[in-house]
Image 1 (cartoon, rainbow, N blue to C red):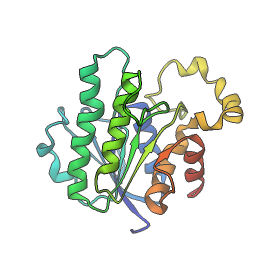
Image 2 (cartoon, rainbow, N blue to C red; image 1 turned 180 degrees about the vertical axis):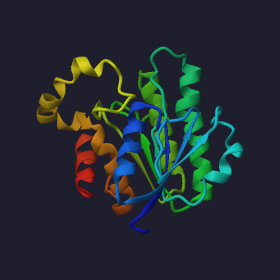
Image 3 (cartoon, helix red, strand yellow; image 1 turned 90 degrees about the vertical axis):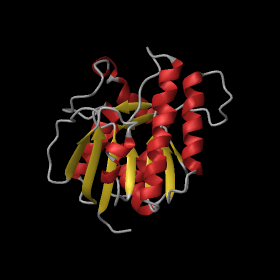
Length: 224
């Protein structure tokens, strides 16, 4: 793999995806970025190409743009709060796997970095519905023939100051981050680390597939 990466990012209109895009645009390890969105992310940069597709399930309409990439940083997702189980399953499992299968076919040497979450249930047998669906998604991704697939399992994610998609409640709980980082580092992650950690995992690999706070920090430091 070349030192300069060509990367696909999904979910760049959300908080995590916006932060990952921000860090990838800054990185001298990244040459080209494709973002696929339902609406524009509002970012312009010589590295960046954006494809707008209202229904992401209609992959044939944008499949031609997906060839020639080293990695996918999959940040697209939704909270289970406020939506029915069928819709959550459709977005979290069905869409993710459908896109991943196409990417795997078009880019057999691709590394796939999936933003999952702390509490994900790999057994798919637990009592919490969202955790079972996330676990099923991870398990299916690991079965695909990517060069490597990683599940990023952050808990608290500290936002990047100045970006527009941070949830409003962070201004009330941001004071927790410095304390939590010291006492519970594995559960407190900074959004500045996730993008670099994905870049590092793509370039250098990692000995775990399921990555928590300390793993994300260690990977991010490898390219700082």
